[in-house]
Length: 236
Ligand code: 0L1
Ligand code: MG
Image 1 (cartoon, rainbow, N blue to C red):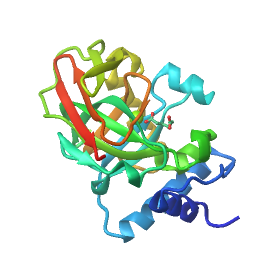
Image 2: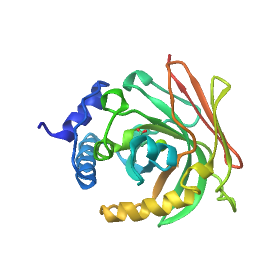
Image 3: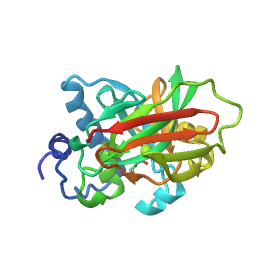
Image 4: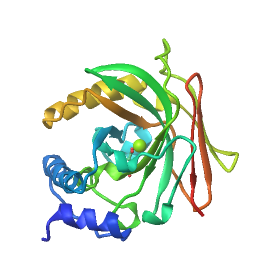
Protein backbone atom coordinates (compact mmCIF):
# COMPACT_ATOMS: atom_id res chain seq x y z
CA UNK A 1 0.00 0.00 0.00
CA UNK A 2 1.13 3.59 -0.63
CA UNK A 3 2.27 5.53 2.45
CA UNK A 4 -1.00 6.01 4.43
CA UNK A 5 0.15 9.37 5.86
CA UNK A 6 0.85 10.66 2.33
CA UNK A 7 -2.57 9.47 1.13
CA UNK A 8 -4.30 11.29 4.02
CA UNK A 9 -2.19 14.43 3.59
CA UNK A 10 -2.91 14.62 -0.13
CA UNK A 11 -6.63 13.93 0.44
CA UNK A 12 -6.73 16.96 2.76
CA UNK A 13 -4.63 19.16 0.47
CA UNK A 14 -6.76 18.32 -2.59
CA UNK A 15 -10.10 18.14 -0.69
CA UNK A 16 -10.65 14.74 -2.27
CA UNK A 17 -11.85 11.77 -0.24
CA UNK A 18 -9.98 8.48 -0.21
CA UNK A 19 -11.18 4.93 0.55
CA UNK A 20 -10.66 3.60 4.08
CA UNK A 21 -7.13 2.47 4.84
CA UNK A 22 -8.19 -0.48 7.03
CA UNK A 23 -5.28 -0.04 9.42
CA UNK A 24 -5.32 -2.83 11.97
CA UNK A 25 -4.47 -1.39 15.37
CA UNK A 26 -4.84 1.79 17.39
CA UNK A 27 -1.04 1.95 17.72
CA UNK A 28 -0.74 1.83 13.95
CA UNK A 29 -3.32 4.69 13.75
CA UNK A 30 -1.26 6.91 16.09
CA UNK A 31 1.95 6.09 14.22
CA UNK A 32 0.34 7.23 10.94
CA UNK A 33 -1.04 10.35 12.68
CA UNK A 34 2.51 11.17 13.83
CA UNK A 35 3.89 10.79 10.29
CA UNK A 36 1.01 12.84 8.87
CA UNK A 37 1.73 15.65 11.32
CA UNK A 38 5.46 15.44 10.55
CA UNK A 39 4.64 16.33 6.94
CA UNK A 40 2.73 19.38 8.19
CA UNK A 41 5.54 20.48 10.57
CA UNK A 42 7.89 20.20 7.56
CA UNK A 43 5.61 22.66 5.69
CA UNK A 44 5.91 25.15 8.59
CA UNK A 45 2.74 24.44 10.62
CA UNK A 46 3.13 24.72 14.39
CA UNK A 47 1.55 22.68 17.17
CA UNK A 48 -0.89 24.83 19.18
CA UNK A 49 -2.71 22.12 21.09
CA UNK A 50 -4.69 18.91 21.09
CA UNK A 51 -8.21 17.64 20.59
CA UNK A 52 -10.17 14.83 22.10
CA UNK A 53 -12.56 12.84 19.92
CA UNK A 54 -15.37 10.35 20.53
CA UNK A 55 -15.95 11.80 24.01
CA UNK A 56 -19.72 11.36 23.94
CA UNK A 57 -21.58 8.06 24.29
CA UNK A 58 -23.49 8.94 21.10
CA UNK A 59 -20.28 9.31 19.04
CA UNK A 60 -18.73 6.19 20.56
CA UNK A 61 -21.85 4.25 19.58
CA UNK A 62 -21.71 5.75 16.07
CA UNK A 63 -18.19 4.35 15.55
CA UNK A 64 -18.91 1.20 17.64
CA UNK A 65 -16.15 1.78 20.22
CA UNK A 66 -15.84 2.56 23.88
CA UNK A 67 -12.72 4.70 24.00
CA UNK A 68 -11.69 8.29 23.45
CA UNK A 69 -9.06 9.30 20.90
CA UNK A 70 -6.77 12.30 20.56
CA UNK A 71 -5.44 14.42 17.72
CA UNK A 72 -3.34 17.57 17.29
CA UNK A 73 -4.28 21.19 16.59
CA UNK A 74 -2.00 23.29 14.39
CA UNK A 75 -1.83 27.05 13.89
CA UNK A 76 -3.09 26.58 10.31
CA UNK A 77 -6.31 25.04 11.69
CA UNK A 78 -7.17 28.01 13.94
CA UNK A 79 -9.81 30.50 12.80
CA UNK A 80 -10.06 33.69 14.89
CA UNK A 81 -13.26 34.04 16.90
CA UNK A 82 -15.78 35.72 14.55
CA UNK A 83 -13.51 35.03 11.57
CA UNK A 84 -14.14 33.35 8.24
CA UNK A 85 -13.15 29.97 6.88
CA UNK A 86 -13.10 28.81 3.27
CA UNK A 87 -15.06 25.57 3.41
CA UNK A 88 -14.20 24.79 -0.22
CA UNK A 89 -10.86 23.61 1.28
CA UNK A 90 -12.72 20.70 2.90
CA UNK A 91 -14.42 17.56 1.64
CA UNK A 92 -17.62 17.31 3.71
CA UNK A 93 -17.18 19.62 6.70
CA UNK A 94 -19.30 19.41 9.81
CA UNK A 95 -19.29 21.71 12.82
CA UNK A 96 -19.74 20.86 16.50
CA UNK A 97 -19.83 22.89 19.72
CA UNK A 98 -17.02 22.16 22.16
CA UNK A 99 -15.44 23.23 25.43
CA UNK A 100 -11.80 24.34 25.14
CA UNK A 101 -9.23 24.36 27.92
CA UNK A 102 -6.03 26.36 28.03
CA UNK A 103 -3.28 24.19 29.52
CA UNK A 104 -0.10 25.44 31.18
CA UNK A 105 2.43 23.11 32.77
CA UNK A 106 -0.14 20.33 33.01
CA UNK A 107 -2.90 22.41 34.64
CA UNK A 108 -6.07 23.95 33.26
CA UNK A 109 -5.70 27.74 33.53
CA UNK A 110 -8.72 28.91 31.51
CA UNK A 111 -11.80 27.63 29.71
CA UNK A 112 -13.78 28.85 26.68
CA UNK A 113 -16.63 28.02 24.34
CA UNK A 114 -15.30 26.66 21.04
CA UNK A 115 -16.33 25.34 17.64
CA UNK A 116 -14.64 22.45 15.88
CA UNK A 117 -14.88 21.76 12.15
CA UNK A 118 -14.41 18.10 11.45
CA UNK A 119 -13.83 16.71 7.97
CA UNK A 120 -13.13 13.05 7.47
CA UNK A 121 -10.68 12.45 4.66
CA UNK A 122 -12.47 9.12 4.07
CA UNK A 123 -15.33 8.77 1.61
CA UNK A 124 -18.80 9.09 3.17
CA UNK A 125 -17.29 9.90 6.63
CA UNK A 126 -16.88 6.11 7.10
CA UNK A 127 -13.87 4.75 8.99
CA UNK A 128 -12.60 2.29 11.54
CA UNK A 129 -11.10 3.45 14.84
CA UNK A 130 -7.44 3.07 13.69
CA UNK A 131 -8.29 4.85 10.42
CA UNK A 132 -9.87 7.90 12.12
CA UNK A 133 -6.94 8.14 14.55
CA UNK A 134 -4.56 8.16 11.56
CA UNK A 135 -6.68 10.97 10.03
CA UNK A 136 -5.88 13.26 12.98
CA UNK A 137 -9.32 12.33 14.40
CA UNK A 138 -11.10 14.18 11.57
CA UNK A 139 -9.70 17.53 12.77
CA UNK A 140 -9.98 20.31 10.17
CA UNK A 141 -10.34 23.74 11.85
CA UNK A 142 -11.40 25.30 15.14
CA UNK A 143 -12.33 28.58 16.79
CA UNK A 144 -11.98 29.42 20.47
CA UNK A 145 -14.03 32.17 22.16
CA UNK A 146 -12.80 34.43 24.95
CA UNK A 147 -10.94 32.63 27.73
CA UNK A 148 -12.51 32.64 31.21
CA UNK A 149 -11.29 31.55 34.64
CA UNK A 150 -12.61 28.02 35.25
CA UNK A 151 -15.98 28.24 37.06
CA UNK A 152 -16.60 25.84 39.96
CA UNK A 153 -18.89 23.45 38.07
CA UNK A 154 -18.59 22.88 34.33
CA UNK A 155 -20.15 19.42 34.30
CA UNK A 156 -23.67 20.43 33.25
CA UNK A 157 -23.60 23.72 31.36
CA UNK A 158 -26.21 24.31 28.65
CA UNK A 159 -24.87 24.41 25.07
CA UNK A 160 -26.56 25.80 21.95
CA UNK A 161 -25.39 25.53 18.38
CA UNK A 162 -26.86 28.15 16.04
CA UNK A 163 -26.65 28.35 12.26
CA UNK A 164 -27.70 31.68 10.74
CA UNK A 165 -29.29 32.65 14.07
CA UNK A 166 -31.43 29.49 14.33
CA UNK A 167 -30.78 26.95 17.09
CA UNK A 168 -29.94 23.63 15.40
CA UNK A 169 -28.59 21.64 18.37
CA UNK A 170 -29.13 21.84 22.11
CA UNK A 171 -26.95 19.95 24.58
CA UNK A 172 -25.02 19.98 27.80
CA UNK A 173 -21.35 19.75 28.70
CA UNK A 174 -22.43 16.59 30.58
CA UNK A 175 -22.35 14.89 27.15
CA UNK A 176 -18.53 15.24 27.25
CA UNK A 177 -17.77 12.13 29.33
CA UNK A 178 -19.99 13.45 32.13
CA UNK A 179 -17.61 16.38 32.71
CA UNK A 180 -15.18 17.99 30.22
CA UNK A 181 -12.46 17.76 32.89
CA UNK A 182 -12.72 13.98 32.64
CA UNK A 183 -11.96 14.27 28.91
CA UNK A 184 -8.86 16.27 29.85
CA UNK A 185 -7.74 13.69 32.45
CA UNK A 186 -8.42 10.74 30.14
CA UNK A 187 -6.72 12.60 27.29
CA UNK A 188 -3.56 13.29 29.28
CA UNK A 189 -3.33 9.61 30.27
CA UNK A 190 -4.07 8.36 26.75
CA UNK A 191 -1.56 10.74 25.15
CA UNK A 192 1.10 9.69 27.70
CA UNK A 193 0.53 6.04 26.73
CA UNK A 194 1.39 7.08 23.17
CA UNK A 195 4.46 9.08 24.17
CA UNK A 196 2.81 12.51 23.92
CA UNK A 197 2.88 15.07 26.74
CA UNK A 198 -0.42 16.96 26.65
CA UNK A 199 0.56 19.68 29.11
CA UNK A 200 0.50 23.04 27.28
CA UNK A 201 -1.65 24.79 24.71
CA UNK A 202 -5.29 24.52 23.70
CA UNK A 203 -7.27 21.35 24.36
CA UNK A 204 -10.62 20.82 22.64
CA UNK A 205 -12.28 18.54 25.19
CA UNK A 206 -15.01 17.20 22.93
CA UNK A 207 -18.38 17.90 21.41
CA UNK A 208 -21.49 18.59 23.45
CA UNK A 209 -23.92 17.77 20.60
CA UNK A 210 -23.91 15.94 17.28
CA UNK A 211 -21.95 17.61 14.47
CA UNK A 212 -23.97 19.28 11.69
CA UNK A 213 -22.99 19.79 8.04
CA UNK A 214 -21.44 23.20 7.38
CA UNK A 215 -22.59 24.84 4.13
CA UNK A 216 -20.87 27.74 2.35
CA UNK A 217 -22.13 31.11 3.60
CA UNK A 218 -23.36 29.81 6.96
CA UNK A 219 -22.78 31.82 10.13
CA UNK A 220 -22.19 29.48 13.07
CA UNK A 221 -22.26 30.36 16.74
CA UNK A 222 -22.16 28.36 19.93
CA UNK A 223 -23.33 29.65 23.27
CA UNK A 224 -22.11 27.80 26.36
CA UNK A 225 -23.70 28.74 29.68
CA UNK A 226 -21.22 30.72 31.84
CA UNK A 227 -18.49 30.43 29.16
CA UNK A 228 -19.80 32.80 26.48
CA UNK A 229 -19.72 32.28 22.74
CA UNK A 230 -17.54 31.33 19.80
CA UNK A 231 -18.47 32.01 16.18
CA UNK A 232 -17.24 31.76 12.62
CA UNK A 233 -18.53 32.30 9.11
CA UNK A 234 -18.13 29.86 6.24
CA UNK A 235 -17.17 31.84 3.12
CA UNK A 236 -19.84 31.71 0.38
O1 0L1 B 1 -13.98 15.49 17.27
C1 0L1 B 1 -14.51 14.38 17.20
O2 0L1 B 1 -15.17 13.87 18.12
C2 0L1 B 1 -14.36 13.63 15.90
C3 0L1 B 1 -13.76 12.31 16.17
C4 0L1 B 1 -13.80 11.46 14.95
C5 0L1 B 1 -15.16 10.94 14.62
C6 0L1 B 1 -15.87 11.83 13.65
O3 0L1 B 1 -15.28 12.22 12.63
O4 0L1 B 1 -17.05 12.10 13.89
MG1 MG C 1 -14.66 17.35 18.18
